[in-house]
Length: 159
Image 1 (cartoon, rainbow, N blue to C red):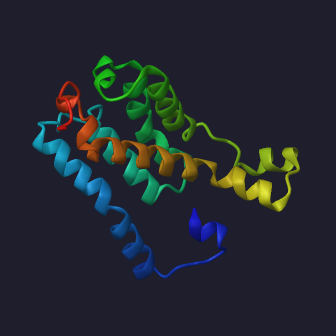
Image 2: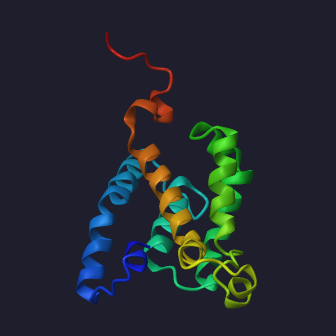
């Protein structure tokens, strides 16, 4: 998203280096989730985080985003997520993940009909990437924050 907006075309080593740096926080979150026993599959917290972060780095075409459908449905329908997020937050995150596979704003037919300014066109064509980054960020931060982890929810902070 940043390279697109900056109209930059980074070399493969630079792009790989940036992706690796951006994977440190989600990697730490996955390590912490694994220590809690969360490694149950594509609809677990770990699975949804992996799907989201992988698509943030690799997303190019709408068919790539099909991987996000189980993750988005899990956030919306699986009651296990209640211990992590309130219902309104689950709706926003799940809808965000389901938005990406059906985002036709970057299709030329739609862009031609919308007659957007260059900035508007950039926002429309970047919307999937922006949504993936935001959802991945929220999932990562929530998994890392020990003060609000499900296991610590009932504990009172030390005075």
